[in-house]
Image (cartoon, rainbow, N blue to C red; front, side, top):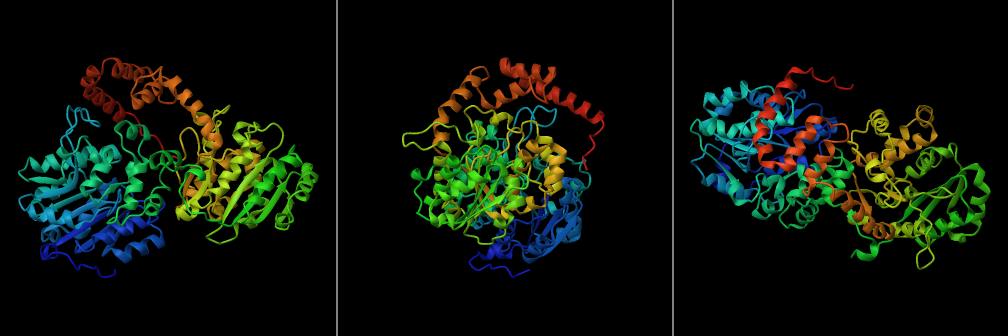
Length: 638
């Protein structure tokens, strides 16, 4: 490990013998930049940092941890954070722990430092009367949200918890960890450790404090519900959950992840960048949830104050059966107008090869000299399959400052999902070519956001059921295909973030993982139409699996359809409870996989008699918990 830079710290902070146990878990064993940043930022304040890895870690990831931490312990992924702390404490040794002035327990559930650490440790050093402290706390909540109890006590939150020597030497501290009830879920961890630790030791005479106490905030859980207020108060830690938690919950409490992302990246004393945050989220967040929470929707270039940057790009145009020469020409002329198109490959259905040749003869010589026509081997699998099988050399380029445009010309009566409603605008352009031109004009966003891996259009609205039913019954198949390809990005529950046959800009390296897909086997298993659709549903998850993020761009079509989207929403909302979260739960209790008579009665009570429903919650949770313990645990899928 490299030496820590401690110049500028006060002598009191340097004199404290302080160790830390940093709990790390990543499903893929990848150590993201934000993890290294958190550990490195704490080196001036901690004399010894032990990283406990729950589960596997890649060779490269282990090397990154070894470079910044004093010690790394790799263990099985059992017992969640509690199990990791238990093994970490045993690894440090109880005698050595008793010799410390302070032990900090923290985990990789936050980004830091978004504000400097030193004021936090300086304030803590002045509070000598306390035996333990934390950054933030959760206020008392009635009833207990996870247990059949009337109240969840006020407590320090466990993502950063510092314990001092009087308590470290008390045998009760060791007994607390060694007699911990089994922990196998997020709720168990909160119920048996996070919400229990503070009242457990307060009751034994040990005092505590939060640097950012609950009474200074309006909500029960400011680390999730008031992240901006915490940032403005100087808190160095920003919870990752702000960006992958239920958007309806965050909407209801007024938390705006887009504002947070922008503010953090623009705060002068923040060591956390936008790219660091997004790359630390994309592999473990549902794509549509991250789009909503982080505000990853861009305005059309005319409305964006951005430098004019002519980023070079490649283009792949797939021409399906029934496409006319005029439709092909319209797309090619947009590419020609973009000026920096380096290369174009057209993959065509053999039945329209002559139309494609005729179209090429009608465009400028400059573009024609950079274009190549190839007959697609499996044209009915769609554009992405044609790219992977017949134009894969476009993916081989390793130029970081070039992107790939993927578009299609399906021909015939094009559907809303193909983003080509044939209604001319005032200038006589077709919406598909107009949106294509807007998308190409926005490619400078790849310069503005270095970790941007893909840019596409919003899900279709008019005449389409993509929002809510976008999987078309293929989600289970998509899960299986993603698993076979090694993609661990969680798939959206109802509607995948996808191009829906509209144009899309991507960094070519983001599609590398899809090249290993056996297209013939996919066709045999699901048929041509569904196989092609499945492949395109996995395009965005493939991009995200590389650590790059995805954004969507509002075009003229999306702006025109916004009023329709509002109308659809209000027509449904008028029939439901006013609260957005409650409206979703109300519907879910009546339809979908979680629907049941019990759930319907519960939600009806919450809607019509909220006071009685709150009173009954502890009894309901005790009953539900007892039934759950009696039921056999479901077998995990291999």
